[in-house]
Amino acid sequence: MPPDLNLRVLPRTVQQETVEKLRLAIFSGVFEPGSRLIESQLCVQLGISRPSLREALRSLAAERLIDIVPNRGPSIPTLTWEEVTAIYEVRELLEVEAAGRCSQMISAEQLQALENTLHAFEKAASSKDSLARVTTAADFYSVILANCGNPILEEIHRGLVARISLFRSRSMSLEGRAVSSLAEMKEIYDAIAAGDEKAARKAAGKHILEAMAATKRSMDSGS
Image 1 (tube, rainbow, N blue to C red):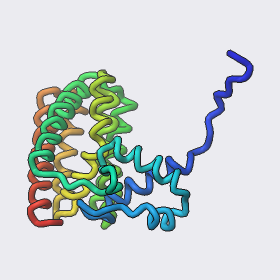
Image 2 (cartoon, rainbow, N blue to C red; image 1 turned 90 degrees about the vertical axis):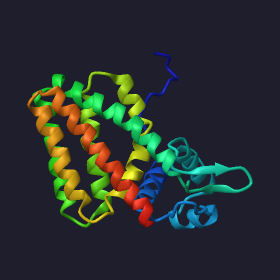
Image 3 (cartoon, helix red, strand yellow; image 1 turned 90 degrees about the horizontal axis):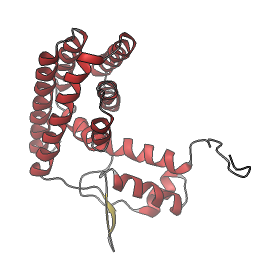
């Protein structure tokens, strides 16, 4: 190794912290779809410099959570139902395949990790913490994807995670949706634990269709 090469891992940067805070704010509905993000206001609210903010905004744009339009600045995108449907269709392809594959290869240790994420979501579902519901549901699928045996599938799915979480925050805002989602996720877990590939695929597909329907109801109601 060259003597001047420094591989020291640095602490989390201001940019990383800013991305996380803004991402969670978007998931929580702090910013309405179509609303502009005023850089000067965000700098004051976050207590950061404009260069750090702009780096964070570029990261969020890469996740498709914001749009950056020349001469207009950053804003929260307003997705059409056709765009939402397209994302759900890809999500279904990826997560159904991942659940089926995971049922055949997950280890006992990782199955316990999956069960732990399910318990975490169960706790969140019974609370009023909408953000916890979103993050714990994402954790559940993260374990499934990590144990599907296909890193490319996992990589492609990771590119959709932010938008999936955004839709999830909308669907979870509906009365009773978190409880229904918990039951659907338990079906997925039970099928994976039993090593039943067909049942795992069926349960994952059912869950996504129900989530898609809930997102449609949420969009129609303007919530």
